[in-house]
Amino acid sequence: MATTSFAGAPASPASGPSIFEPTNAGSTEQFRASYDAKPFEFHHGLTTSNPLFNLAAIRRLLDVPEVKNSIAYDATDVRVDQRWETISKIKPPIEEVFDQIATSRGWIMMRFVHRVPEYRAILDACLNEVRRLSGHDINQDEKSREAIIFVTSPNRVTPYHIDRECNFLMQVMGEKVINVFDRNDKEVVTERELETYWSKDNNAGVYKPQFQDRAFVRTMRPGTGVHIPVNFPHWVRNLDNVSISLSISYQYKDWKRKNVYQANYYLRKMGLNPTPPGQSPVLDYTKRVVIEAVLRTKRIIKPKK
Image (cartoon, rainbow, N blue to C red):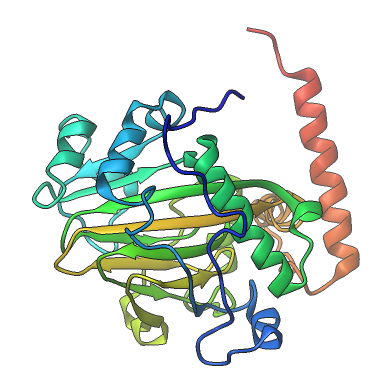
């Protein structure tokens, strides 16, 4: 796919921004133990002093078709437990929401910013650092990688949700409070929710306020970040300031989780109680093979329009 560069934008440093070990440990061993297993804080080198991450530079991304055409946004108050599809679809133009971000009650998710080479360099540098610290060969295991910029109005809430990405969320400007829950706590997130999420509904996660005290809670400030493992539910409350955050993430290939959860979804519909992923390598392998065969058959026999 074609990329768009910022004419005259400074090149990113060859080394890229730094991602360090968890702040409560300070060791590569701790990073490896926590990676995609539990949330942790880290430090990074991105702030608004970087000319790619002030509001004026980010505003210019609205002129990049590959980015603008993939922006998700709204401009209204939302609740922690609100489903995305119930958020008002009535909203001003994106330019208006961005230009009035201090008062517009806006939430702006700018996807695919890595299609601009300067941001792609940052994405790659960060994931190279993650690979070094985690010991995990991302290049062999990834389905895709992505850089996303979030711009948010003061006091705005991002509702509780589940993501499929292994995510490093970095705070660049402003402060916000993030709440991350454990995907392994089956009172907080059930197997049925995860099966439904991977099979048909990105909003399958259900916020359970009675378990709020189980969340990993951190106030994110410029220069700090939080690692969010795959399928760890989370929600965010912006403080009384405009916030800029950068999400550096990648998706595993489908066999890692998606295919097994999809198989379990259909087994449960048949009245069975399937074994969760990770408990039986033989069962997981069988489910992956069956699901891949079914999906391959569907693609072959898909009727022509």
